Length: 286
Image (cartoon, rainbow, N blue to C red; front, side, top):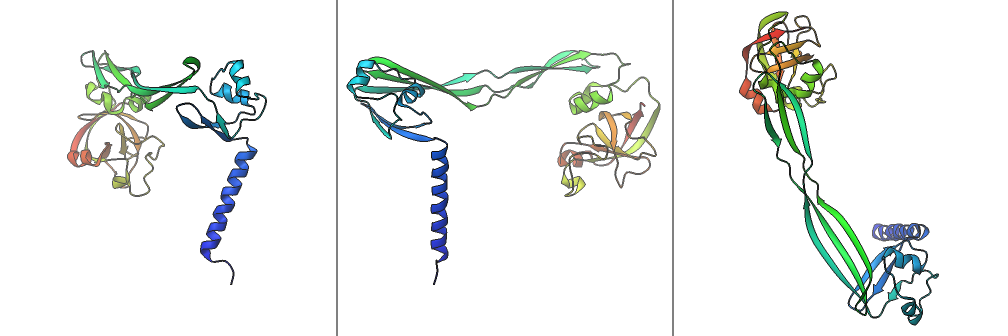
């Protein structure tokens, strides 16, 4: 009474294999089994002629050998190709190459200095070489290089001294984030100085629920240096300096952040618990 599910699955699988083989054949993709004096290997090829196939292998055979073996260079490559007296030798080695070096220039109101942010890690590649010998004479050579491990850049921080009158722009606050927060002293000029009740949050679902997007209500990427405020107290987009935290941008709001409250963004839940709830001094710059 008709095909079973198992038979239907087998038939469907056979159809997929047939279609795949047809598509490969239409694309001209095939493989040649090459039988040498000391080795046999399969080489995928798109060569239309035997001459093109030898070119893929970077193999240059003498005309006398081609005549002796009755090879027709203009013919299509056979499925199985025997090349007597031709031997192959393969060499493989691993090579380390240095990590790229990058520098970041940062302002500081402390001492100018140089620090290593990331030591980096060298990359590694595998180099292989294949040599073809006909009766002991080199007639072909192929080389291939493959990256096994991508390098991790070595990052050097260059801190330059700036005066006490210097305050970072909004762009610098968002770029430097936590990296430079410890480098700043309270600003000499500011509009207001407030003592506010501070809490802490992180960008993930622990603080924001399953709908967390990683961005604030103003479209900034959430993270250290972006804080939530009550816009009636501190307008959004205002630059701030918070003692013990550093420069920040008023770039978010929160349902519980009303009145004289501020919510400081940290990277992890652990840091939020460590901060807890406390009073902080906030300098309003804009």
